[in-house]
Length: 296
Image 1: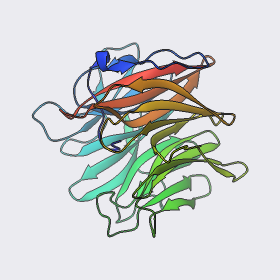
Image 2 (image 1 turned 90 degrees about the vertical axis):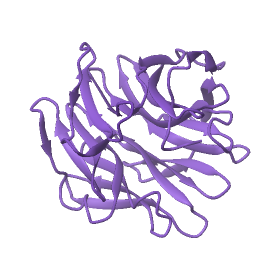
Image 3 (image 1 turned 135 degrees about the horizontal axis):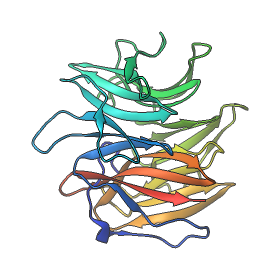
């Protein structure tokens, strides 16, 4: 399991697992090395990528019917997706020692800042967007001397809701995705990671079943509340699977060969099918690419 890293084109190491419901095998989306943190919808794809030998990650968007991509973030900064809702993109912008949440509209090709209450002097990170909500993390995940949080912000009311935070027995908390009236995140101790889903309408939170206390992470959610998660043992690429949790039942969508991991997933629904985008890591070489699984 590795939240910050995920794969390159090693399709021979990726095998579709048996399932009890229809799902396509993993399909390549971007096979360029160092492509990661994907998000999208039926029209657009957004992701982050750096060039070989370069240190900066830039955020890009393109129509799915195009081959050409366009950069989102200003020159000299680092940017990581993120999410998209219609034509509105949300992403993490790192400039110097500061990390903030930024917005970008594809139609007008203009950047903007989120409402007051989202960005602070702390390290804001890993956002997704489903109006009126922004889900994001606060606190540098590499700094374990500070409290890290998962926050849901309502742009219509300017209300922040704390979903999770680090503390005694909680080593790490990471935002997953907000989609419609559902939000997901994961929480790790030193021995296991668990994924949670909040129904924003009822306020009810449930935990995805985790028999054996494995590592569950890289969660995303459909607008109807279906949760997608990665599961693994300890170590990068240690028996990784992509799972679906729906109606109380867990189904394996894909299993990965040794040394292949997932960093982040993002789900969107169109035409009666849900696409799960994810970035893969070739653990040994620390190279990335982006794949998808399509399921009913």
